[in-house]
Length: 89
Image (tube, rainbow, N blue to C red):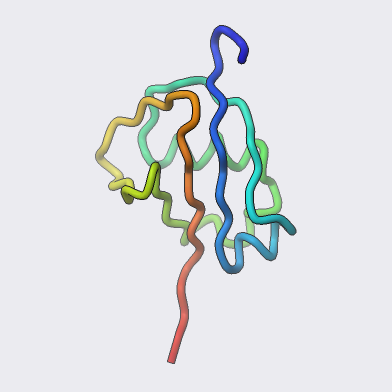
């Protein structure tokens, strides 16, 4: 770990998994603080392939959905789920 970064695991589901061509990855991010939009921007820096679904992604940290007003501080070992729009019939 670098002094100013924390190691987080990104988990990809459905279309996000297809676009990234993997189920998960570890990466280093500054700890924050973030809001939903700034965290998404940070994710897009390392996951450019997610741009086609950028407007519809839902995020969860450690299995808790993030609402757009929440202030987020990341810690080592946090898991960020990248959940694309769901469709069904």
